[in-house]
Image (cartoon, one colour):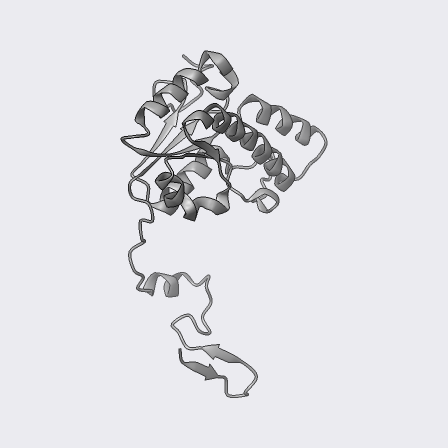
Length: 209
């Protein structure tokens, strides 16, 4: 590792292409040669259990979904994530009425999504369901070796650092986005969203059938 000292002797740098460069310079960043991104867990399938569409329906929906997950655990490595659902919307509404900033409202959303992760992990406990945190992603191999089904809440961990939103203050990065970010992070084999709709829509199918 080569070290380089500025002429005035005040600063000592580790010599690299990034030395002394602005990390917001578009031209420079585009000129960088970077290695292809490693796929950390290319055999893992991420399955997001919808909050409002699945978790909120309780016994009417969850047992059947859990049965399907268990029946596939021997063939596939599955990481489950959970949405927040109606309770998230309720606490968002209260937070907005009381003037809470985006970061606080995002923290509210994380706590509700985490409650659903605990719910799903508990239902799956007899078959190895275990609730994990975001900082345990690198331990996935250990969980799969032990025949576990890891369950993680889907809200990205921006929380207090969530990007401010001018008009609504509802965080723009919620559980669907968080699940996609995790899928990209680990190089997942697939990213599946379990919801109560037949596909993707350009508007709200519950209101505009």
